[in-house]
Image (cartoon, rainbow, N blue to C red; front, side, top):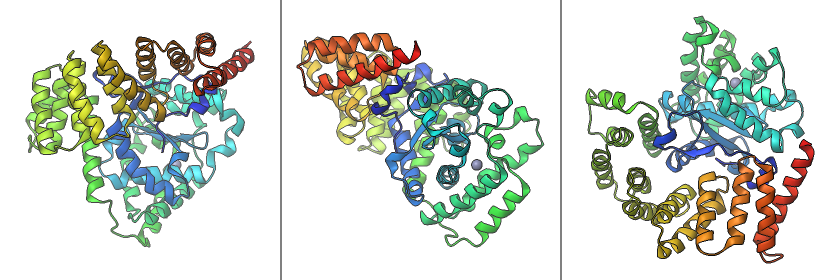
Length: 453
Ligand SMILES: [Zn+2]
């Protein structure tokens, strides 16, 4: 699946709200980007998507930094998972159960029937809706914000992404089938519903948004229990490997999303303070404190434990880079990049560290890394900014202008986009791939500017 917006939707002139899981913004409301977490989610979602008859690339999964427990879909192929869901759901099977249930809504076309029309969800509105979801996260009601972005007014906003009881049960049943096809006991889906059952007694304000949009009735629970009782996949569990990565994801998110002093004090009383996952959480907490020396000591223990793990080297690079030592960060980022050559976010980080050295010899390697990063993941604002700088330092002004045009496109600045695309067209050889891309961007931007006036 994709964790990013396609460049083909550049039409949207989207602001890409995508930023990494870093110290500076870990507490901000944002979409989260993290190579390791995305890979883990992908490992969980892929078998479910396949069971539902969807190609992994056909669904955008976005991770929203929001502590409430929520998951929702909109626009027919976008699924948002809150970090509150990722951290609170304790097993990979239960999380896969949530994904399967959401896929049940997608496959059943539940919202698309109601959602104004499909056209409205293409292009600018789609991306606007995603950004609204991000903004709405502050209120814990991304779904309401999405409704607002799509022009749904008043009381309808509150129920816009809410399903009927019939749809809920249909999604439960479809989800249970997907789980079975993936070899998993659908009983895991009941675990999540049980989290909400206790919340029904609370006032609406205290209920997780998921419970509001996915109404939990006694009937629904009963129907799913019946379905689970006659499941063909009783006892089916996710692989040991997936359990490992799922637990590690929770440890990583716990480190980044909680206050470090609090994390460290909790770890002090932990039964097994030196378990791999506790060391991981502690490394991150020290990094955020910030106490880079302690953070490095912890991350080195992790690397000793798993000397071929790209994400531990990536974390080491991040600790070094963000504590001001770009030079030292290059080696671990380079190692991470060798171990996981197809991770654009890691390639982007390596590029950034190399660029920070401000040395012509390092610039060539930076350029290659940044080109790799944007080739498969073109919507990262910071990477596009770095790429433009690397091109400019290399004297490739046309390509620098193109990268800048792309960045402004993702930042919803049509006039700046137009200006830089025009400059790229002037500088690049007519008909070259870059020129063609700049021409597309300018044409789309022109239409968008005209449509607004
Ligand atoms: Zn539902």
